[in-house]
Image (cartoon, rainbow over the protein chains, first blue to last red):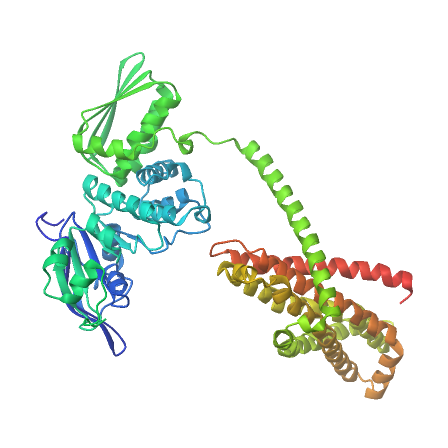
Length: 257
Length: 372
């Protein structure tokens, strides 16, 4: 267990490449415990790639990713399992298992990681579904849900093991503004009441201004971080015109894309 | 160390003292113990003393929620005392109240009856879908016959190549092996009666009338019927079928008709290959037991007539139509989810094989009365 003043995620000198093409170069940043941390950037700048490395789906060329003090890059076996227990991930399309209802989707994780009896696992699953407002739909199959409900169900599944960190990949993509706002409220509520740290990949501006404590911005050309800070500060005070344009949602000819 | 204690305060009040760390590990140990105790006693009031709980995660909360639900069901009261305020707040957030999931489910007999009913309804609906699809296909085939320009001929040739030309090798091999095995097995039995020359009759008649068409149909069903279902199923999942419909293109005419025509066209040729190689296999066995090749050929020529050959080939046209039709129907019926396409392919093969054997039986009766 880490000291509470220590950052919960620390990324050091991370370099990611596929073959000869470098995607991210020498990234250094840290995420404080309990904050909502947003990874931003234009299309194709490596946001999702960074996320996939942080949850150990891919292995970087160089660098360390410390999750609660343990390096997820080099961890294997039970050590990796221990780290994975501390994180939950919501994938872009929910990635719920189509052959199981929502309750079973969540119980699966609980039964894999704990010795809880079925009754207990079901109660926990219902509680998690209740937090995201889907307790009534516990016995529905994922195909019966709308896009927003799938994402909320995916958050409930990601929370099954009471993780310290939740990674969300494009939570607002493909949702209407109201559903998207409800999801933002849910993120804020969970962050406040359960003290969960959120790492969110998105480029939905309204959502960023609502939920973000801190933002990093990746750049496709330099392949590194070009801005860090609070969203309103970046919009108003950034030295980089591209960053200011991104936040004020303008496209001007003099700025490279 | 987590511990749990029970005290009867009076006849109707049970006190449950929980202390220590209430996480997934300890909850899994305490769960059934606590619920059983409460179930046995059925107290009017359950007092949970959580003063000693210094940590409580989702699993611990679940235990408290489950105890609440148990008390609600038996119309009793519950008081949770001494729970730290931070955990109390979480409990309020998580508590799903009286949701249907925590209620006891219907008993197994009711579920069984329900299951049987649902399966019966599903089968009837499936039968209805097959009949209506067969009708639709027939009408559109007639349309294509009367107006051949509407057929997508390039697609049809490509499908015929995949389902027919590419399957020649496997069909020939299968025919050869079956001819060989059949001749060999029957030669052993026939030898006892000195009737080995009639092995040629047996193999030829059974190949031409029954085995040839059936084996070829099985090959086509497992190779191409499943492929049709998987291809159309993937298109359904990717909303390509919906796209066709909204563009005003009829999916049955666009996708099913070329497949049905291609399958019907290749089936007789594949069957003839199967028969030919079956005869070669049979001939090899006959020659190896000492007959002259010319004697074998003569015997084969005497054994069957054109009626046997064409009777068999006529069946293959129907088999081809059944395989392609069912493959396309299953593909178009594909649901959603990762397993849907696999299910469709399986159902296509199973339904095709049943339909083929059933149709073969109908032909047997028909040919008997027609004297073929």
